[in-house]
Structure formats: C-alpha cells, structure tokens
Length: 391
Image 1 (cartoon, rainbow, N blue to C red):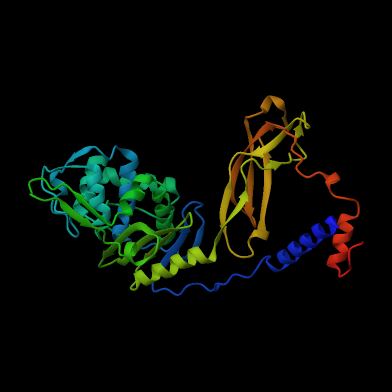
Image 2 (cartoon, rainbow, N blue to C red):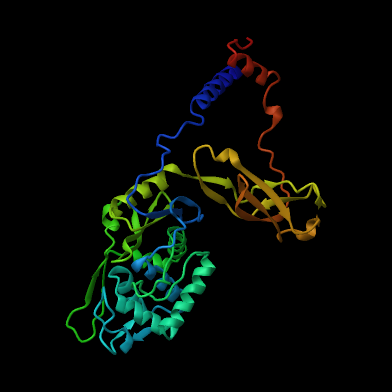
C-alpha cells in the first residue's frame, strides 16, 4: 500500500511535467520597428549581439565618442588625481561645463562632467592630461578600440565634434564598447548617476550636473550610458538597463525617435532572450577518446566555472560542447592543475570556453537502486498507460 501511494504521487508529478514542459514564448519574434538608421543590442556579460540594423555601417557618432574617452582615462590613470585645466581645454565649442584656465579638479570630476553634461571642454582636459595631446590621446583611443574588437572604427578626437571625416564608428562597434565599459565598476557608477555636484573653483557654489540621459528616468532599471548629437551625426544614443541580474545595452545612430527606440530595443533584449545555464561549476566531464586518463577510478575531470549564455527559444537544442585537453596523458600528478577546457558551440559558432581541472574522485551515490522494490518502474509504466497497480 505504501508503494502504491508513492507510485500515485510519482504519476501525478510526471503528468504535471508533461504539461509544464517546454512552452512557446509569449512574445513575438518579429524584429522591432525603430526609427534609427543603425542600431545594435548586446548582452553585456556574454557580449552576444542580440539585434542589429545596419550594424556595420560606418557613421558619425557624435558624443557617444566620450564613452571611449572615459574608459581609456579610467584604465590609464588614477581618477582621484588632481588635474590643472590647460589653456587648450578652454573654449571648446558645443556642450561645456565651463572650465576655467588653471582650475584644479580631480579626473573623476572631469569624468562626471564628460558623461553627465557631455562637456567638450572636459573631454579636451582629460585627453591632454592622459594623452599629452589630442593626437596622442586619439592614438590611445584607437589602440583601445582595436583591443575591444571595434574593427570598423577610427577616432580623431575625444569629444566627437564634426571636425573630421575620419572620425567614425558603427552601431555594432559602439555597442561592444558600451558592454566593455559597463563591466568597469567606476565607469558604471558614473554613467548611472542622475545628478552630481562637483567643485567649481572661484565660485561660491559647486557645479550641479544633471545627466542628459533621460532613459535613466524613462525606463525601469536603466543604468547608462550616453547621449549624443551634432548637425551631421543627428541624434545618437547609448543606453543600458539591468533586470534580474542581466544587463542589456543598446546603441542607435541617427534616430529621430531615440527614447522610444531604446525602450523597444531594451524590451526586445530582455524578452526575446533568456539567460541559460549551459555549464555548472564542478560539473564532471569524460576525457576525449584520444586522451589516456590514468588512475581513472581515482580522478575525474571537472569544470572550474559556471557558463551562462542568452538564448532564444529553440536555440538550446543547437548547443554542443567539446572537451579539449592540453596533454595526451593525464593522471593524479595533474590534480588541481588547469589541464584543458570545455568549448561551447551554438551551431558552428564557438560562444565560450570554461577551464577544466582534474580532481580526486569522491564516491557519492545518492540514489540506491535497492531502495526501490522490484517491479516499481513496471507498475509506474502500467499506470501511465492506463492500467492499475498490482494489489
């Protein structure tokens, strides 16, 4: 009688699973309708491009340039360092935080002026401090762009003013830049700030900087990143938002309705893709057939980290994994060493690698076959087919 109750509970569970299994997504799969000439969406953590429209078209990017200016400066020097404003930073056209010749501010204060109020004078002051000259800083910018993988971009200045036809990027390159920069805590802190007060030497009050990025107020979870406009580039916008541990970033170039475009594209990034766990830390793996695993009963291959990746509905079945080891023979001498990796593929594309180590085997058999009476699974099968359990 006890086992009949167990069987009954199990059958109910299996029937529930059959109804609550894979379900079609509740959202539409159509590409979003937007006003932007070019756009791109990225999952910040994984770097996966989730959407693009004219993604590799070379275009002017206006003040989105300042994202690169900021991250180059943050990574190159101590942002608490005091900067004396040079002559060449005074009177730069366009947006300004009204720096004074010889005024002293920290680099951090200049970065807030750069990213919240889009100060072109702040951009020049940062470039001159960090790069020694505008040209020298532009070289640093292009080196960083190459490192990030921005293969269709070239930078001539730190602010994005329309003073060179050789200053350009693409939506995909710029969204890669956004993702890279947002992984830096100092950058993230600056661009998520709505209002900031910084010093104003010679005045009785501080500068009060209000962030021009309206997405911080318009979109739930918004936490970055930068506005931009020039007569030639038109309206450009970089934004980001975080929900349930995921962060998505968006770029639009020449977008008349950019605020609505970004709300649409952020929704698309969160709703069309689900963060999926593909590898677990400590997960056990079989060695490739070509590899000789010594002491097989005493050691085992395990992954050193988790791997999660944003997937569309139906993409999980396209995921495959392959184990690679650095040596043809491994054994107890390699315990706790990094001996290889698991490579994860989506279709034919490699999407990530997780390191493997060798650890001593521990026997943990949590499921004892003897705990289930003879004929148990046979009775379960009969019940699922409509029969009754034996008395």
